[in-house]
Image 1 (tube, rainbow, N blue to C red):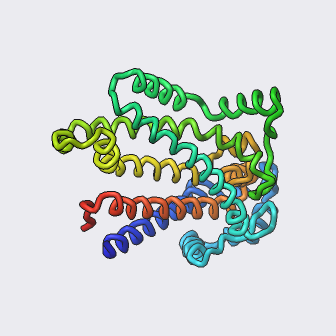
Image 2 (cartoon, rainbow, N blue to C red; image 1 turned 90 degrees about the vertical axis):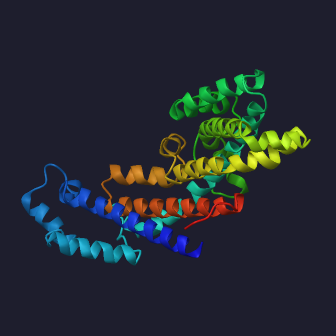
Length: 309
């Protein structure tokens, strides 16, 4: 187990390294970073001044080496727009995205009991209803759902604020409800679908027939045996959903003015703030790596038969 985790961490490290190298090449090789920092009408003198100021007149391999060295030190430079440390800006926004992801993730877990309900009697009334509803909520565009929630709950009934942010304390709970409700239906639908599909597949295996032949109650068969063996697929999907949320629920954060990583990244791209873009990509990649490693650890806890070699 220890050797496996060491290999997984090393593998993840090289993936992040490759991702950041690709980002550097995309900025410096596929395009001219100076063109992103100056206007179209900038004079040649202004362009050369920018090159000199940011060291862009040095050879590419020298800049790449400095880029990697600074990245290992956690130094991404200062924001070109705000003139503060890019890393601090990203870490200031990270808790906001994490809390929004946690709330949506918790609500999305309701899809698991719905999938279990559907799997109890395949092609029954409950199964058909869950199937239809799960496909329906997955198909709803998040930007449209967010706007409809604002129109109905915030404007029409004045139950919640339309957008904004008031901290992560008790006073800010009203501002997180609409963004979370916008993201949650898709997660509920996907969790219900994977839970239903994996449990139905497990219920067709021999060990279920053996458990029933021994006289075990149906609930014991479903919860103690079927759900436990189906849990790996469910945990895999939930880890994927959480990683996706940590990438930044960009559309939702923009609609509701939620100051998370997704909104920060879009604002940085629009403002051509390359240090903030680089820091955001690095932190998101690191968060996804941690989530994937955590999911791997859950595998062994859920099923001791899983052996890492």
